[in-house]
Length: 328
Image (cartoon, rainbow, N blue to C red; front, top):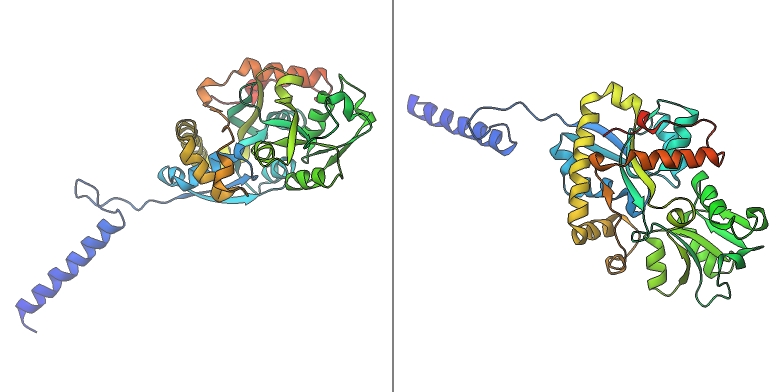
């Protein structure tokens, strides 16, 4: 082979290598070769309702990836199961939807295990919890639920919410709380197996829109526990934050960016939710997305008031200092 031909082949090979480096993002705008991006692995737990929108939106917008995170997900039937997995090291974090009363209960029983960031409040304008009855039911007030069966989602938070909702009308022991998978609540209501159901969004608004149920009461935490109730939050395990510090920092930064996107792009977010939730896109039009409060705007005084109420209600054995849990 001639020297000329060898030269041409060599140049062609070099161009192929350079092209490959550009293709995988190894060469920057200044022409220098960059180190390969090594994504940090993080496993997020979730449930199929819109409070976990940060998980779904972060994946679909590639915001997690842009922050150097390779996200894996695991679905859970209840928040209690999710937090058990979090404490057991099976998952690293959960974004948006972990009940604050449950977070406070864990902090009471196992101090220092969880770190919370970001929050969602239930207000009169943004209800997250509903008490539903069958369409054209004879039940017209909470008082009418005495000696009736009431469905609710699984977990200790639902038990507490049931108690607080009915206790001003009758002794909670004078009705039966039946806890079940959220997807089974409305079929059980329609079949007459229960007389009412404590239902979360977006399931509640969709059921009403379809004519499957009527609202007996809404914004249950806000109306029956505390105004502007700090309802849910993002959490990660302290173990993860301690052992994978850079990934934990990246996750918080990514979550801040994700919630900003959620709060400003409702239609795009509903498009994303339609991929992850068991509802058709048209039905998601009727729901109001929860407002995800950024870390810097968390009202820790309100969260502390909630902790004080839970302590007064004997839901907590000790008075929890929320500053030891929430980071801003």
